[in-house]
Image (cartoon, rainbow, N blue to C red; front, side, top):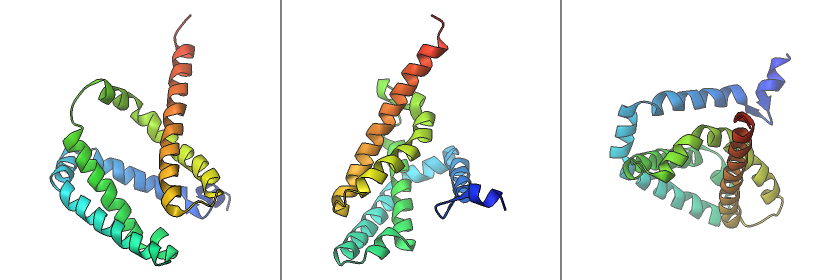
Length: 164
């Protein structure tokens, strides 16, 4: 009785999404899975592109419900994630200052990005912009806020952690 409100916020189950994240970690932490995604990145990219076109045509036809929920949208989201993971493994598998920075920041970035995206989306959606402008704006502003929050955290944490 008291647990349910803690696990279900706004109709979304935190416990359910926790298991999605854990399954993702379990699969994507295996090098064999990452290698398979790298080999099939073109397939997933083609699927993502085809589903994007299908969703765009549906949105242009005024069928918003089809675009923002349902199996087609979920398939598009997952094929895009799998494509980007395979593409990143192929193109970004090297060392350098940028990759070292991203490797150090990845966990905190992961922790901060959800809150940043929700906060940004809350205000941008209220502007009632066209969906084609709203989504890229949410993505860019969300990542900018995430990087800013990470840098603030890193600098404050380093100051308080190091003896003066």
